[in-house]
Length: 343
Ligand code: EPU
Image 1 (spheres, helix red, strand yellow):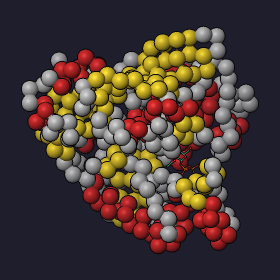
Image 2 (cartoon, helix red, strand yellow; image 1 turned 120 degrees about the horizontal axis):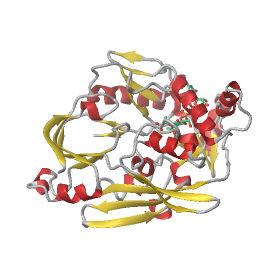
Image 3 (cartoon, helix red, strand yellow; image 1 turned 135 degrees about the vertical axis):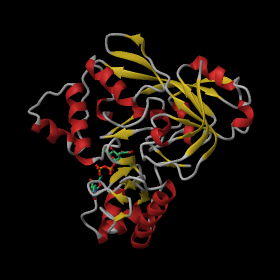
Image 4 (tube, protein in one colour; image 1 turned 45 degrees about the vertical axis):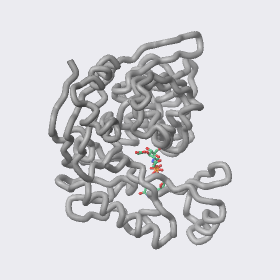
């Protein structure tokens, strides 16, 4: 039977560690339980005809600024299955509630290539396509071939291929047209059996050298990535946070030229005819790196990350983030967009 709680705290279910109450909380462990949930007595009123329904994975990219007056679904759909295999590639289908790093370990331990650079990203397999998670030169969109979901309004199962997911930088159709309209129940990835190390992103090669490894396996790369991440990013188990709070802004060539003329040390990544500027650099220049106010702060080793030292409310963290946005805007005229979902 599906697990259900009424008027319950979401504190254990968000990595920022903020307090918020959910009117209704369902724990989904299989696609079958989805039907049970939809048939649950009074479900339509609870979710205000699906208008107030929020799906949570690990709660690692969310900030609650208020109680949630509706239905929260904690996705715990597990299982990793090989659906196709040949000499050079393998396809695996992961339940959307599988912890992302467990999936990374599952694949690197079998010598399969594709997601080793995405080690230790918090969250679930089902959140990977929503956010198009990325790190160290690799994005989920590079390896996702299909997303299986249930469309809540249409009451239909659907399968989206890579193109239909409309992936962009930390973006997909699930954050736009399908926002809060679907429950993803599994994701299919195509991985390679042939070594294809991606070591261009700064820090990884150096870390492998430090480890004394010259011909790295996927497992070595994921270990190196994990070690670099641990050295820069706060562990949410110890210090509440939701990873990068802001996206790196993408600006026109004119703006980039203007900025780099003024600040020759600025390093940006070219994206077509635009430039992706490190938000961490903008925040640092605006003097906010390491800035602390009460129980929250801008992390001293990576200013893209806002941290809850304990007891900060979601509203306070949101207000704090707006101050950072204002400081950056007044110095550079650049609007920092949030990466974290705010409710
Ligand atoms: N920088 C500074 N000051 C700092 C730290 C960084 O100026 O204190 C500048 C440096 O110029 C550095 C640049 O920022 O070269 C980029 O920093 P970093 O390589 O650490 O990565 P990022 O762009 O800040 C992105 C992702 C991270 C991902 C890393 C590694 C976004 C919003 N963030 O951060 O993803 O782990 O690259 O690939 O795209 C997340 O999405 O939650 C996340 C942590």
